[in-house]
Image (cartoon, rainbow, N blue to C red; front, side, top):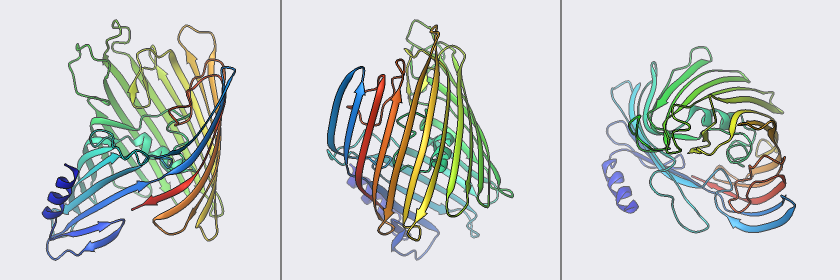
Amino acid sequence: MTVIVIMLTASAFAESSISIGGYKIARIEQGDVDFSIFGRLSPGFRYSHRHVDVQDSSRFAIDSGTVGGDRFGFRGSFGLNEDSKSRVGFVLERGLNLDTGTEPGGWNRQANVYVSHADYGRLSVGRIQTPQFNFIGDFDPFDDLYDSLAANVYVYNPRWSNAATYDSPTWGGFAFTVGGSANTTGDEGNDNSSYSGNVTGLVFAPNYHKGGFSAVLNLGHYRLKSSDNDALLDKEGVMVTDLLVGYDFGPISVAGMFGVRNASERDFLLGSSVDTESLVTKTTQWMVGAAVPMFEKKGKIMVSFTGREMELFEVDSKAQSRQFSLGYTHAVNRYFKLYGVYGYINNDDTAKNSFATATVPGGSGYQSVTTLGAWFSF
């Protein structure tokens, strides 16, 4: 089926510019159309060790997606008028498990269409990466090399389905993003339906970028319309606030993030899945980090420290987690990089988060992960 899609799409854009990894492999002869194939493969050797709940265990494996998740996809757009200020386009992106050769179902990463104008901004509809996900990726000194925030200590919502977002143009460095989702994780349902994944979302994110300085205020609200957990969390809401600030000095760039997730009862939404068994009522989290370019910016040293404290439902204590990450990446060329990363997480007795490795479950104690690998992008 995938091959058929590629053949049909390439045929539809036969008179257009077709590119792979930014290089055009066919030149446009008429019309104003672009079509691109993109992706990333990141195999790596990963060693993990944990001392959790008074037990020691280790794991060594060849893993896929050690650089923010392996993926491939298609982008296409065409101009609506002669001045090319207006465009209509699409993005289709799915995950890929390189170590097994399998794919998650559907276009699970992105599947959306958009219309944009250079003077009026861009409106996107479909399955979309949340503004919170995009902005945190911008400020994380690891970029999405290690995915050190997404899967570990700093909690955020990476994508939502049934969504629409609007990105404004930039005025003197200032811009904003606003959007919403009728159901962030699945099919849209009625308010009275017994479906635990029926979560609506709204976001407003003003941001400022000028010179070496960047700042973002991300404001979000999530609401569980109905649940199948004896209606315990019906109509529950979670308010999300993130402040992100960074500055690029040239020889070094620094960044910091501070976030709060405040639930009206309990935080049912952690990451991209709904957890009606959650005991978390309020989460306070932060990150400070830096990146130092080396060897004429072909190399980069990255370091970050991330913390999280969670207040628990009817429990007079807080669950605390801390993470330290150190890494280096070196670009051989624009398509091929080598990298090495070390991460360390320490949880208290009530914290249960873990690294992205599925076979390293969370729990009280410490966990460490060392990864060496290559990063192919196109």
